[in-house]
Image (cartoon, rainbow, N blue to C red; front, side, top):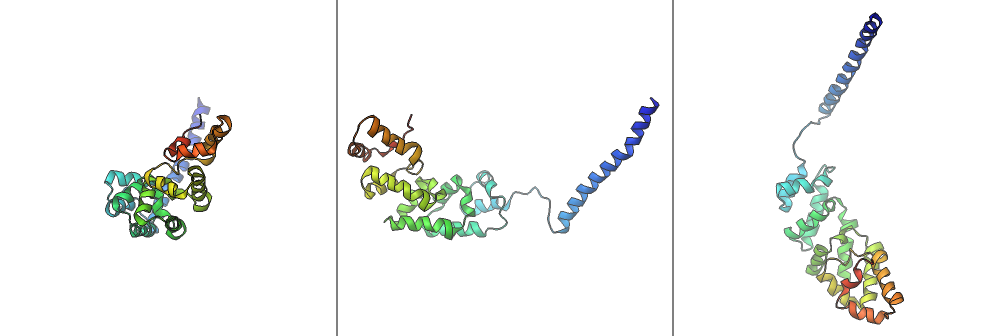
Length: 220
């Protein structure tokens, strides 16, 4: 019993030392934050108020969509993205729809990521209102690379439908053109219809001109 008591007493200074070190660590950490001008605050991130005032989101929506933007320290990039989209014909409703799908849109470089996509669709012959409709209905476009993803998908659809005019017509009407995988759906379904079912590509194309979503179904 005596030995046990001695061991407990010998551990007390060690325990107090560790406790004191922890207190000093956390108190000095707080002091360090204050010393460099930082503050410990439970106030909402400034982007919550920004999304409410600049885009018209409700406070609860803004709190939700601001989470991927918590790393931002200024509104420089969000301002640039919103100004660009408004200059391209987007109204607040369209902007909210796009941001609700991809909040990180407000973080990207306009000149490197947004402008080339809009220019690409202008080069295809789409008007400004058409481009807005296409992007609002086909949100994934904003997350795709023009040359690695958008061009191959459009070329595949052009070969399936037989003309670019039909591709653009359906692109403006539907919201699933860019959600269909070439490798996992379109190509597999085409091979099934032509090779296993023996249907000529011309017949397949004839059906797809009026029902293009037919070939974008899950292969199974």
